[in-house]
Amino acid sequence: MAWTIDTAHTTVGFVARHMGLSKVRGTFNRFTGEVAGEPGDPTAARGRIEVFMDSVDTGNPDRDAHLKSADFFDVERFPTMVFEAKEVVPAGDLYKVRGDLTIKGIAKPVEFEYEHGGSGTDPYGNRKVGGTLTGTVNRRDWGLNWNVPLDTGGVLVSEKIKIEVDFQLAESQEAVEQEAQVEAEIS
Image 1: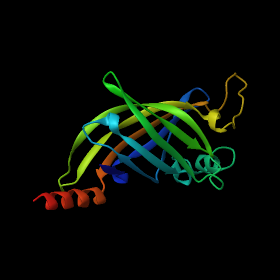
Image 2: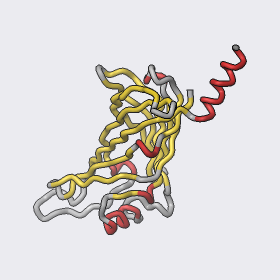
Image 3: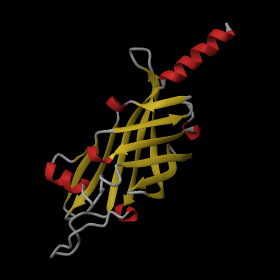
């Protein structure tokens, strides 16, 4: 079964510590993605999400411009970040999703936790499935090295970044049409 990310009901976000004192939150406002699998069996899911890095939004235009620069994402040379989910395994009440995260052209294996939200049909008859992926990565693994040492010790921006993708998937129209065709052939 093919599913596409419902961008109106999905958030791709991150959290970094500033000076070790507070958390700065941001989102990416443009992304696309697809998942293959059955809504009742998360372990069968395989998918891909592509995030457009110039859509970063932390609520501060100056900070967003800095994140887009060569100091961080270098969006001129590397316009997208991609996560490809390759394996989903049960882990108690949650699941572990293993795959490759590519930032600035560097692909690294990562593991995220997945909380399955379930599946259902919206008021318009569209089948949906959703959940939340969370995990922490070290930004330096992808060459995101910019920082400023502080007089009090530590650095301005944390190396560890929390990633959270709260998503809803919609059954792709192509899958719906194929399912209808198969049902028509059976009848």
